[in-house]
Image (cartoon, rainbow, N blue to C red; front, side):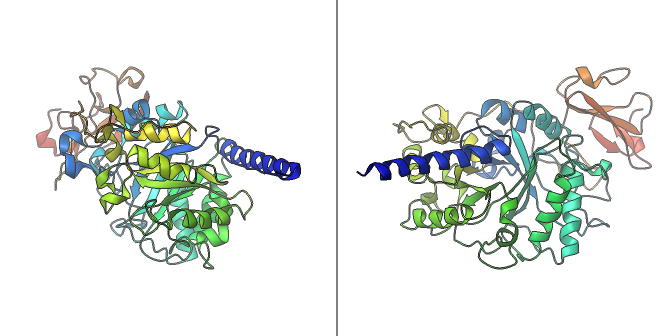
Length: 442
């Protein structure tokens, strides 16, 4: 081979490695390809039963190797039940406490907030995902897009204008994910521009903007080919794309897999500091529409190595944590095999079929449906403290305010948040929610 060709090949490889390294370092993440998991929907729960429901966020942070957790979902962008159209959310059984009956779609999730704060200290990143397959992603106007961006900023990120409407209390998430699968593509460039403008007002953090398009290129909602789509107009503002290579013809078992991935990579490498592309797959047999969309570890290794070293590839994304939790192969979670791949290691093919793990010991319960005062599933693991509530030594949870029956205290990562029940209600320290006075021993 001509020496010049060899040198050019080496130089090209080095440039690719430097560009990928630059992108990751700029986003304050490990200097390697990433492993990302969606959490919060418990989609495997109906199959495996309540004893194998998706574990809490702290458990995943401490026991799994995901670099980024995408919390799903804000599924109502403009909740019609709220007078000012603030967004509504659904986190399955993880959180259902509604502190303000006027906002039935806004939860208060102290335990999740505490886990986020603690796990961020370990280098984990947390995103809030907007959308899902039941969310109408229609924005309607540029003004609505900017209005939504401001609300998301103030409810989940660094904004401070909606202090009583922050589901995770003082926890500040690391960014926003767009999983838009229904509705109109219009005005998402306006949303992203406004969100980035707000993010730049907080220089203390490196916020992320991501999206989860379907694999057919271009995506019907995000683009990038069609004018007016987010990727076409503001593709450079995205950090990562978690492309769903399942439920479509371009899944890794098809002849179109590599060519479609190459289309996405050609686009992202054509723009300045374009987003890194992550291969999105289900982490269990039932995580997608057909069994063939799931790839056992040995097949996953073959599929991923076809694209792993291409310029612009940034790792793998899994839908979702509850499937991974219940997919144990040779004593290891499915995501552990993937972690070896994104870390550059090889994988040893399993010698047995996947098995599910034994029932975990958990205090998490399915949400309680009630037409009375709102109920919370977040409960302290120790007895209620007496005297003044000292959150610095109390586990995350809800506690009565000793001096006032109509008030309570939320402890999250050692921080106390003093709350008041709606007028006419007192805090029921036994049932852990605001209740009618005749049901409360005060």
